[in-house]
Amino acid sequence: MNKKETQLQQQIAVLRTRLLIMCAAVGIAVNEACEALATGNMGRAAAVVDGDAEINGLENEIDALALSILALNQPVAHDLRFVVAALRIVIDLERIGDEAVSIAERALILRGILPLPVGEAVAPLRDAARNLYLKAVDAFREEDAGIALQMCRNDEETSQLEVAALHRVMDYFCRELTDDSTGERLYIGMHGILICRALNRICRRAANIAEQTYFIAQGLNIKHVPTAPQPSA
Amino acid sequence: MPEKQKIRVAHVDFFYGERQALYDVSLDFPENRVTALIGPSGCGKSTFLRCLNRMNDLVSSARVKGEILLDGEDINSPRTDVVSLRRRVGMVFQKPNPFPKSVFDNVAYGLRVNGLKKQAALEDAVEQSLRRAAIFEEVKDRLHESALGLSGGQQQRLCIARALAVEPDVLLMDEPASALDPIATQKIEESIHDLKNLLTIIIVTHNMQQAARVSDKTAFFYMGKLIEYDDTGQMFTRPSQKQTEEYITGRFG
Image (tube, rainbow over all chains, first blue to last red; front, side, top):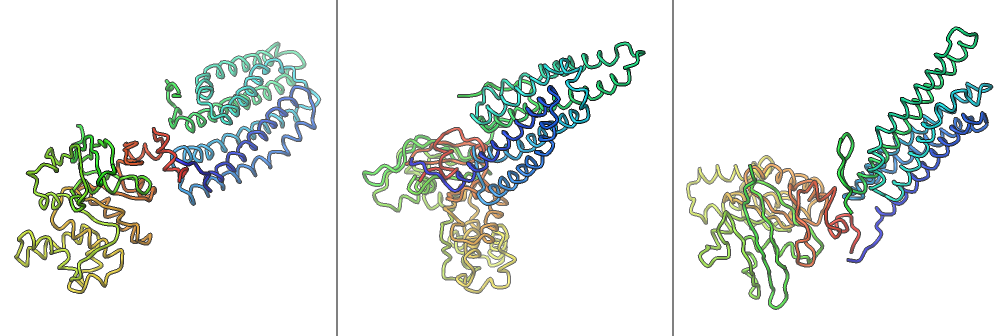
C-alpha cells in the first residue's frame, strides 16, 4: 500500500506540535516556580505568574483545533485516540500550569523568608514532581507505552513522598509551639503544606498524561485499572 | 449465550475465468446483526457480497470454491434452488432500480410471483414492507403513481421495501446510499438500524463513517483477502492489523 500524508495527518501534526509547545511552556513554569522557591528569585516567580496567560491561550487553541479535527475529519483508530487524548492532556497541562502559578505565588508571598526553612522538607517531592513531569512529556513525545505504564504504577511512591514531606513540614511548625517564632512558623508551615499539595497534584497530573500516552499507543484505557496490562509490541 | 451465526463462510476462493478475485475468505455473519464490508475499489468486497446469494452465477466465467452455509445449508450445493435462495437472501443495489410500475406494484411484484393473489393480503404486505423501509408515510397517497416519480432516496427505500416484501432472512446491500444526499442517507441508515431486529444485514460501503454508524461487525478486504474482521467499535478505535489502520485512516491510495 502506498502511504500518503492526508490533510488529517497534517492537522494532527499541527495538533501534536502545539501540544508539545504547551508541554514545554508548562515544564518551564514548573521548573521556574520551583527555582524561585528554592532561591528566592522573585523575577522568576513573577514570570511564572505572567506566563500563565500564554498557557491558558494554548489550551484554548488546542481545544479548538482538536474539536475542529473531530468535526471536519471524523478521525478513527490511532488518529481518533490521539485527538481524544489531546483533549484530555490539555486539561492536565493547564492544571499543572496553575499549580506552578500557585507555587510561584507562595514564593512571592514568602519573599524575605526564602529560601524556606522547610525547603529541604519538600525537596524530594519537588524533585519527583519535576522528574515525573519530564518523564511524562518524554513518554508522550516518543509515544512510549512502556515508560507511560511504569509511571502509572508508581502512584504509591508519589503518595508516600507527599506524606513524608507533609510530616516534615508539620514537624517544623509544631516544634516548641510556645516560643516567640510560633506565629511565623505556622505561617510558613501553612504555605509549606500548600506547596506540598501543589507538587503532589503535578505528580498526579503527570501520571494522567502517562495514562493518555498509553491510551494513544495501545488503545487501552488504564485509568482506574488496578492491574494494568503489559504493553504489546 | 453464543450468537447464532446466520451465514458461515469457510475458505472461499473466487475466480473470474483465470483471475482470482477472492483468496481463502472465512468469516461468520451473526444473525440480526449488521455487518459492513469495507475496502478499496477492486478489493473483492462486492464480489464476496454477490457470492452470498449466488448473483455471480450470472457471470459465465465465474467459479467459486469453498463453503457458504446459510442456516447450515450449503448454498452452492446442486440441490439448492437459486430462486428460493435469492428470496431468502435479498439484495439492494447501489443505484435505485424500481420497475417502471406503480409504487404498489413494485412492492407487490415479488409477492405476486410467489403466488399471493388476494388483494387485501397484498395491501397489508405492501404497507408493512413500506413501513419497515420507513417510506410509507411519504408515499401512502401516491401508491398507484409511477415509482419513477419518486426522489432518488425514496426510490432506494422503495427498493428496500420491495426486497423486504418477500420476507428474506438476509438483506445484502451494495453501497445503498452512495448516490444519495445526507438526508436520504440518514433515512436509509435509520431503516437499517430498525431492520436488524428482523433480519441479518450485510452492507458494502465505501463510506467509513457509514460503516461505523450502521454496523455491529466490520470486515476489511484488501486485494481479495479478508485482512481483519471484528466488532465495529474495535475496528474503528483499535484495529489489530496495520493495513486496516492505514485504510480506515486514509493513509493509502
